Image 1 (cartoon, rainbow, N blue to C red):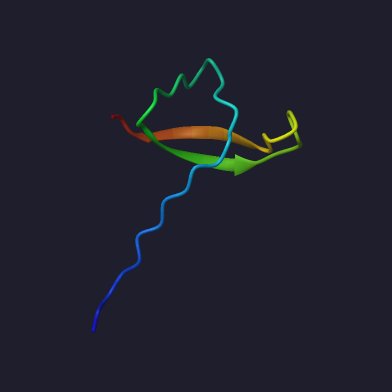
Image 2: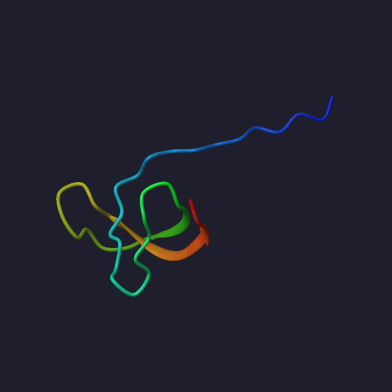
Length: 50
């Protein structure tokens, strides 16, 4: 069987103004220093628009 697992998760990430991703967009994130209590990731690029 050739089965593939699709993963999707909701991770709190900082959305910088230069990328300006909207709700529903598919983005790539990277780990960074803690920005706030729950945010330790930053949006690096927008892969797909909603």
